[in-house]
Length: 103
Image (tube, rainbow, N blue to C red; front, side, top):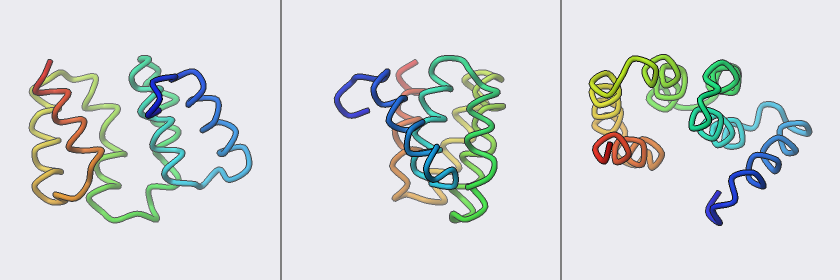
């Protein structure tokens, strides 16, 4: 993802998940790519299972994100501000919040 080649990133995450379907980071990163592509149903699938093994704030962020992204900017903004306040070290929430502010 860092290189900007989202097609290669998506393939790499899918390959990793074929070997380890409960890898939280790979599920999260693939879900972000799917969400960006508008594939909310597949994004939700990526977030479901593994999120039970992560801290509560991060799990709430990942589980609720697909439905919140569909509702619009106001819902996204409130949700992300709450997540960032509860978990200030959670980088993905900060990035998502910056994207909402930018939009």
